[in-house]
Image (cartoon, rainbow, N blue to C red; front, side, top):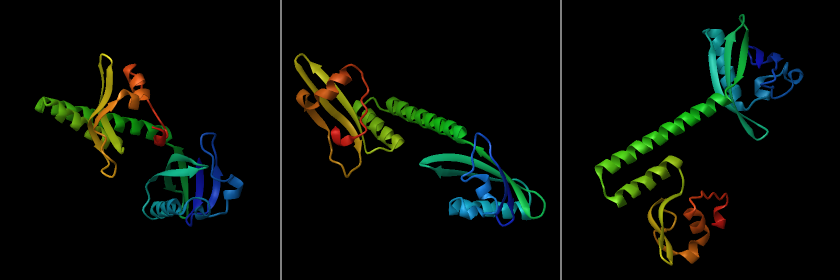
Amino acid sequence: LMLRLSKDGIYLDVIETKEIRALVSPSEAIGRNVREIVPAPLAQQYQDAIDTALQIGGTQILEYQLPVNGKIYHHETRIVASGEDEVLAIVRDIGERKRVEAQLQQQAQRHALLNRLANQIRNSLDLDTILQTAVTEIRNLLQIDRCHFIWFRVHGESREAEVVSEARNLALPALTGCYPLEQVRPFFERFIKLETIRSNDVTTI
């Protein structure tokens, strides 16, 4: 998306592409101030970048999130002076780059977690310590309320689940202990098959 703006943030020209559409049609935008169209904090960033580009020169780069119809878009805008009282702004969609950056950060966090767990295993052969470290580190990494390590035990006809280690929000009750098959049968039967269970409504668990 290419924009031509006055020193006061008035749209003078708007050229859309198929990749990025303006928040309003070009004909509606021209002659209006950015403050009338984009959220106030972003409008202020635009005006500050316009002022800097005109007063100091150079390319001013903004990265921001823009909510549109319930969806979040990641954009980068580069603003340069065009004469004494106008600027040109080139807007790019950087959503894919942000997704890749987030994936790389998640991978780095997982590798760091595995390294910490590996160090814990080397430093201590005590299983309880290793498991407690694991659930604590995983809870911290995923920023969740609970993380459990559970043994699903089968001894002949006797079957039970034992919550061996847990890391939890202290406002929640502890769940460590043994649970008979009758109480955990839906989980037990699927875990024995090494299936993953996901529930989007924890009130049903």
